[in-house]
Image: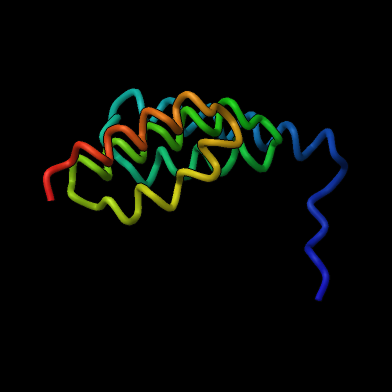
Length: 100
């Protein structure tokens, strides 16, 4: 089971940059799209930019909490923690204060 060849590393970086750009443009218009924030986090994470991934996942987690989807928000905590422990702490705090 082999991974597909995506081209030279420089090309991958360019693809990540372009994908990040398009998600950012989209999220400027639709900043309440939790799925898009999560996907942006995935791109940053795959690119090795864990602090930026944490910010995107943090936004996704907050939107999920707002919608009562706390279990899905909790799934993002390990990746948030990896990129920015203070954001992870903020999500933990928010989850402890959510009315159930």
